[in-house]
Image (cartoon, rainbow over all chains, first blue to last red; front, side, top):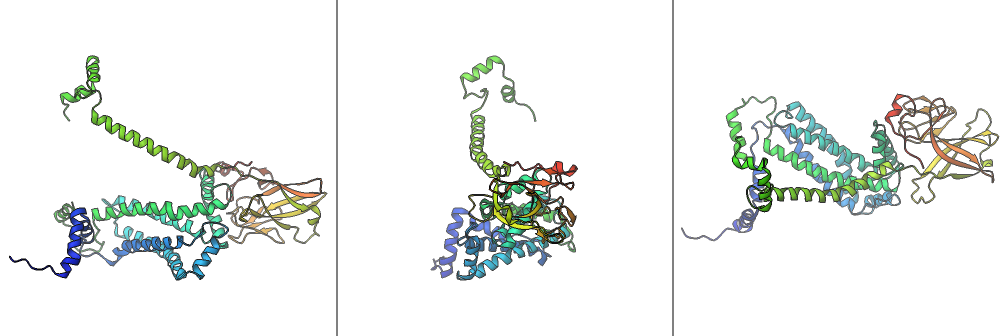
Length: 246
Length: 218
């Protein structure tokens, strides 16, 4: 067979991908993630999880941009927020995306959880997926709580005073938990920087970790059919599908 | 699982064999194989290194939870600033002050309601609502909280809404220059008996009070 000249696509796309694949296996990994088998009657409701992932990436990206201009210091936090909103190029938009994105994320989270519950998708063998999802839920709530204070206006301050004091009413550990958030017995300069650190370092790290575990389980265990599915469950076909992913 | 002769040697070594194994650690009869030793060393050293990092970090993060409340006596000016008010009027003079001498942020600003009870006696009630810590305002009947509707009478006792106990008070004294001095902040129960300070929403008397350890003051 005569050697033909490689086409432009082979040169620009295929060859570099092959080079990467041969050395890392990344291309095969991404392909097996994107082109995995799902039930034929998978519903639009099952896109809520990916929507959540998308909004999380939006929050992470806009959060990084906001952190470039925000000062976690009681004397200048509010002024830096005003700078982001009024002075910075498209700062109002980035801040708006982060602010509204947080509400969208909480709404999507409830819808996603309701979908999983109604579909019975938390049952065997997906219990761990549900548990890691529950941990992610708590961490998203903690993100909302810690992010609210950072605006450092009257509403942010008093809402957080109330939120911290609600934690304080927990039996036995409550007072210590409240002091943990306040970084001491009363609200002070350290409170804002502690919330900032929790909001942009500690909790996001936890969310990244648990999203990875959550998605690992989703890919490993496959997606459930909707409860209205007419397709009979074929055990041997299911086993074959599981085997093919190994 | 069937026990192989090697297993038997490893688990029950006769005294003579133990000595022989110690003399030749490479032998299969050694009390601890090389692989086991290295596994143990990796886990042990790894755990130690982890602890060296984790312990100081955890202590530093949790230490503020156990800090004592530091309070300084505050001079809020001559007692003549706080005259007795005629019956039927709101008896409270509201005063703001910083409760920390080195405060630069304004976060230690507090508001206190002062009432002149006559004969150089004063009552000083804190404006922190005992539901969840919002600032209350004085009115003709007592105090009211804008956040969740807590209502208090003229002595700061709850008459309606969610607060769990009366408003906190400050110790008051008059110094030799005739200035009013605010001392320690303390909690009250419904019979206006003094208790050690606790956070908002935490009862100071009754069974539930045992669920909330008081914050140490110093």
